[in-house]
Image (cartoon, rainbow, N blue to C red; front, side, top):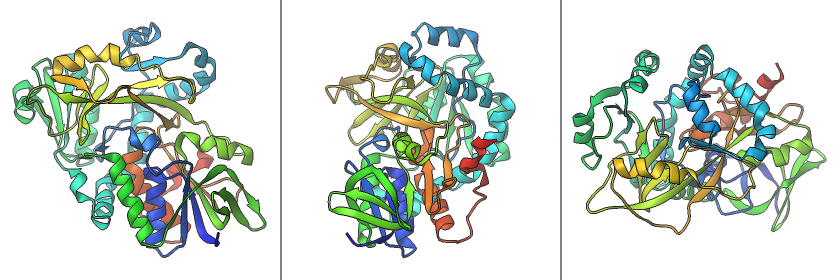
Length: 415
């Protein structure tokens, strides 16, 4: 194969966005994956572009919630007992990063990425002729009790500081927006600036098509074959070796498979998650994603049906699926919204790549010239794909980054 300027390893929403931004800047780019674009982690999400995000998911501070998780009765989390010794060091760091002051610090450091998330998606959607997948109706977060709603005060104060629009609603006002919801909750917050897409896979596919139209090349290959070949990076593809001066690892949960042999070991954790589509019973429908905050699931209207997403599962990346969380949350979900029959015969499962401080790595690779990293986006791969693509493309081409990339450097873990 001919030599290119850059090879992007991983054709999920993050890698695809990076490849597209590089191609828009005139670079010859190859996008490599073992599967078709968008079929791994990027496929399974709530379709939400969360420009309103303030606090990341945190380690539970409520002893009762922790006990429920420990007893494997919690709908919001599950774990494999045999995996606990492996994940324990990560959980300890995650718990430390969940202290209130650390969460506020994270919110401020991540704000530049979230603030641009929707605008960057809108630009790429328009460029790719895929604006039909975008909805700008916000999303609803529901609270069944007073305690959970009262705990929002700090988050809402930061929302005002960040100029993030929201409306606090009572049950009737929320059902005015979504009449198919049952009145099983007492409070809701309508985050008005949130957008969502009706088919995340189709969005990634549209971005890939635009990338190809700009001269980008999509190839099947083995990312683990990445190695130095004189002054270049080389990977093995189905069409032969491919060389480039620069390479980007945007492999999400699979990044360690490529980076560990190169001596790059960062504290990446894996949160597995599931989703399944359901038909709405009767005429029931949703106009926007809805999150049941105290139970820990999302109902998102998709082209395939109502997508029900679960919370986190801590298990080995390749372990057999154990979608037990559906059994725990389905009664609550069906009590909130009249879900009909499932569309698929079995749930989909994927892995979210998460660093303990809830920030992605978007930076050069320590000790490896010409190698760049873009992974660890946790629950926000879809949200931050285009923003990451722009930021990394600016860094790789010597342009002025739109925000300070220092908070996302890999070297932060060396401290």
